[in-house]
Amino acid sequence: MPVPELAGEVAAIAADAGALAIKLWQTDFRRWEKSPGNPVCAVDLELDGMLRYRLGQLLPDAGWLSEETIDNAARLGAKRIWVVDPIDGTRDYLRGRSGWAVSVALIEHGQPVIGVLDAPARHEVWTAAAGQGAFRNGERLHASNRTELPGARVPADQLPKADRDLTPVFKPNSIALRMAMVAAGDADLLATLRWGNEWDIAASVLLAREAGASVTDAFGRPLAFNTPSAQAFGILASSPGIHAAAVERLAGRAEATVGRR
Image (cartoon, rainbow, N blue to C red; front, side, top):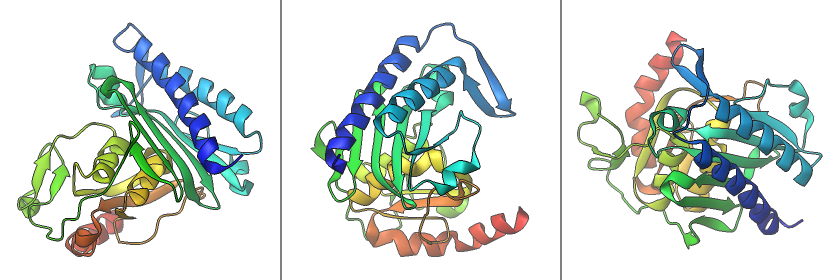
């Protein structure tokens, strides 16, 4: 099946997961912490099972990596793999806020070729296929053309003193949606300085790339997926004109953080 046609099938499956999530949203479901500060709920698990079954039917040979499934090293031998976060932004989901999304990506040879975010509480569907562009509700996306780092819009609740020349804008809990803001030109820069999981970013990395944004790890290095650790240090997505300046600004902090690990 050609990638664009396959992307449509993936979006339809993600939409069904989103419909179930919105149906159960703000109801009385079980919730707990997998570890301190790491919430999960029964809806996460229900969506995970649904997505694994439906996506598995679509591509029976594909491997599987999900936040809510115990990892299996067999995925490392797969030529293609689903990378899924059933609810990215669980905190917002639990608080009754809209900043969450179902995130599904298909990885081939270490890179995303299909990315879908279904955000029903925001009435948004984000889709991307390699070489085909990125879209929100059917409208093609373009990253901003900003060339100066000072004043760049960053999804953030607050900024550290060293970054107060930047401009904070609304921050959904979902990092996938924050990266999608860069793809849409609603933000100029998204940066993290921590070890993160592939399922948090796989779909939105493709969205940002296809919209013309620059996307690397926190050190400015290329990202790879379906790695043994399923992690990367930091994510840096921005308009191309400010990417090098952002890498330079964050270099010392990134090195210090990695050194403390």
